[in-house]
Image (tube, rainbow, N blue to C red; front, side):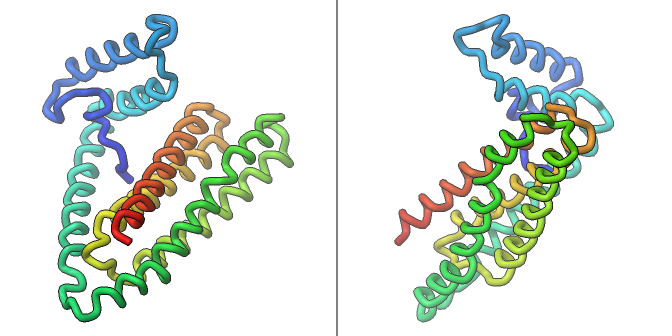
Length: 224
């Protein structure tokens, strides 16, 4: 599932050649690497840059990504259009808004917090010895719980059309759930191969999800 604009991450045009992508990658790595520039070193930025180049630097992976990204943009456009078409009848606007807040937004928001909040503690526990079977099993149980909660959140989110004046909030919530889903997948990959890359990207995706959740909440506060 595509949730990141890798072209934007590498600061290149989608029509860039493989050579231009490679040059952009090297320039950014050098710019943000602590050994090259301590003043603006950014470890998390390096992770994002590496993730983008891993895909765009491979012609086959890039082709697949481009297809998914175009579909993703179209789906987002269609989703926005559907949001603005909902609840045109003003007589039931307030009732629909409260219903959506109470039956969709609030429970979904609560579930997202239940998924995101324990991550740091779970990783701290696992860090004691990632190769300890009991600690790893506990971490995997956490991820399984996350999957169950995420499925419940998706079902709730899809259960009702959102009020048109909450389209922005719903969009943030939608992308938040997608980031959580991808984060769980990366964390699951870490449990299979112990590659820290997936642990770091999983944490970064959860951080992005947390920001999207906060933006959704800000949107709610701005309307109510």
